[in-house]
Image 1 (cartoon, helix red, strand yellow):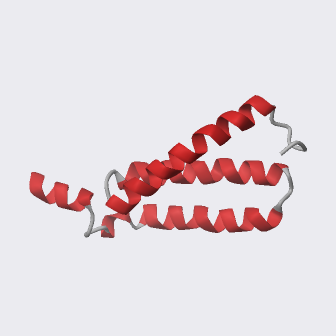
Image 2 (cartoon, rainbow, N blue to C red; image 1 turned 30 degrees about the horizontal axis):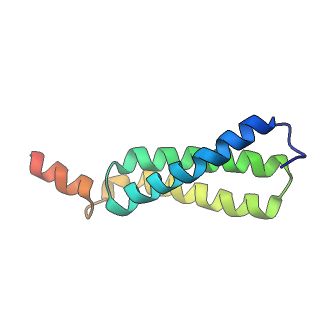
Length: 95
């Protein structure tokens, strides 16, 4: 990541937190808990990754990351159809 405009401290901070954010997003999505928040954070994470990838001009990986970002967007847009998750189960118990 040397050819980027980002300082090394920003790169290392992102690299250190990316693992934890990614694992939290995956865990929340698999459990179906706080899906809206997990999808928004996942989409922002993909945007950050795409920014870094475009800085080093790795367009092949950027295309793949754009696909993932579009999947996050579509799943977020269709979140109202989410019937088999902990969010749906907890929501039905409250009513």
